[in-house]
Length: 212
Image (tube, rainbow, N blue to C red; front, side, top):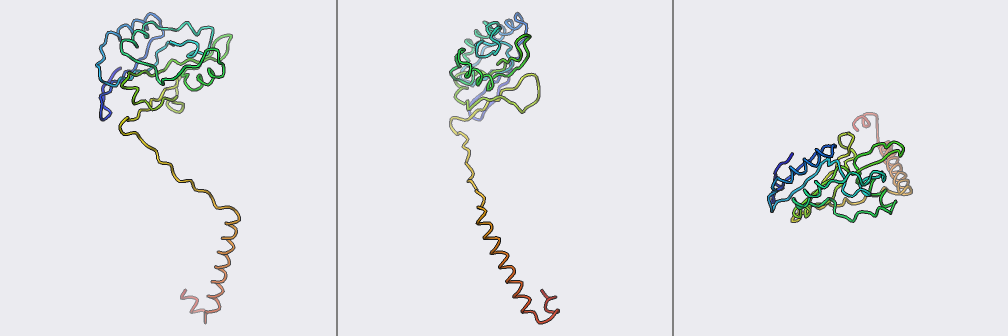
């Protein structure tokens, strides 16, 4: 699915891909997409469930099959459409277990069981953008609270380069300390008591009290 829109200043092309799990069908899809011309000078964002991983040791926690899901067709498509993966960052080393675990928790979208190995996860759902689109990128994050499914969504946050959104910080309000509250309570009760006594001593009769 693809659509063209405007963000107010520039034209945007948004493409959603749901790639088949079958390798032959998947490569055929990427080949057909590669034949579609993408206009230049427009922001292009491509995302979806690609059902493959191009950086196996980083995008798959199951090391026994980490390198079995590459896609030459997707690599050629990314080159033809001049796309880069989002967010742009240095991928962790496959030898750094702590960094890999942190990356998996932050970016992997599909969790499943592997017989004999337990739970595993993969980064099958990703966003890509061209140079114009990357300028608008503010952040990406897993949608952990959206519609429930077997995959987690990936939210793409965009921000204008000319008029960025600025969030004002609300002033911090601290509660009054207990000793201050006690002094205020004591003063208030004393003032009310004195006022009540003054009213009682100034009343001449029950009729006067009824007028209050």
